[in-house]
Image (cartoon, rainbow, N blue to C red; front, side, top):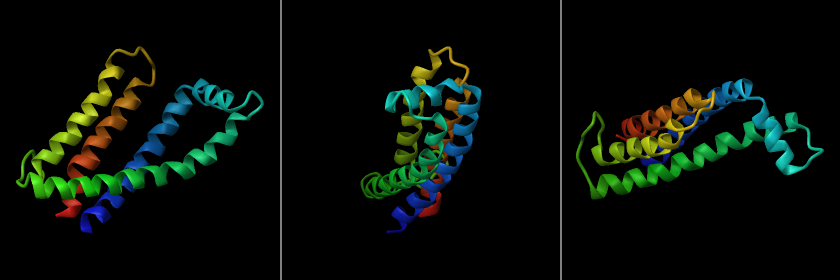
Length: 137
C-alpha cells in the first residue's frame, strides 16, 4: 500500500510540474489553446479551457502515479534489486526508457515548445523513476 501512496505523491508532484511547464508552453504558443477550443466548438471561448485543464490535470497525474505505484510493487516483487541510484533498477530503467521513447518524436519537431516538452519528459523520468521508488522504500 505504501507504493500506491508513493505513486500518489509522485503523481501530484508531476501534476505541479506539468501545470507549471504547461503554462509556459501555452504562453509561448497561444494558438494551441485556440485550436483545442475550435475542436470542441467554433464558438467555444479558449479561456474556458484553462480551468477544466487545471482541475483535470492533478487528478489524471495522481491516477497515473497510483497505477505506476502498483507497477512499482510488481517490479519490486518480480525484479528486486537496486540499480541506477534507485531501490529498484528495473523500474527506474523502464521509466527512463519510457521518457526517452516519448522524447524521440520531439527530436524531429521544429516547434518552439520542444524544450518545454523535453523538460516535462525529463521530470517524468526523475519523478517516477527515482522519486517514486525513494518514497516507497
